[in-house]
Amino acid sequence: MNTCGFFAFVGAILFSLVASEEKSCFYPDGRNATYGLSPCKSDAEVSHCCREADVCLTNGLCFSPGLGSIVRRGCTDRSWKSADCPNICTTAEYRSGDAVMTACGLYNSFCCGQDDAARSCCATGNTTLAVQIAGGDPMFTETVTVTPTSCPTATGAGNLGATNPNGSTASCPTNLKTERNALIGLVAGFGLIMLVVAALAVYWRAKMNKKAAENTRLEQERHNIEQSRQKLEMEVAKLPIKIRTQLANNTQNAA
Image (cartoon, rainbow, N blue to C red):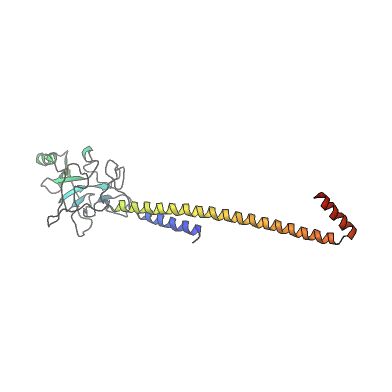
């Protein structure tokens, strides 16, 4: 493979990896949302985000089977100004993470958090804190697995450990985005090394070509000198003997 073909090959790999990376998800404060969040509508310009084990709801929220609760998670719009972002439970105490919500006993009536303040909110029916959630139909149905809630920082949720039906604690989900970024970094690093090697190879070849050209030039000059010497000897041989003797004597005297 020539140098241009190698560069094109490395570029194609990097482009395909970057192009295939899904959109990032963010919390209301603009922080990158980790722990396996992905857009619910991958083909949409802006979408709310849920975890792999969640059920995406049409109102922009997520249902967590592990918690048995509604959760406001992330959005692909970092500014959260899009109407497609779930503008629910985005006050200061919930801006930097997931917001697990407490059901107040009435259908579609919830309060932000799962602490005493949330329970007080439900008890008093304080409409400034209670959230009326409409359109909470599942966007899709899939086999659900339990995801632990102690991995992300969810204000108001506490350290809620999720367990499987057999009582064992579920492990944190693999951060696929981090793995993909690591793979991209690995390929980019390998590509950079190969670029350096290719550049050194080009430099070495240019140096060798220059040296070969110089050797060819010197050889040609030696050949020309030899031809001139032979031609001169032939011309001298044609001279009368007296003149040749005179030239030989002059050469010896000069030496």
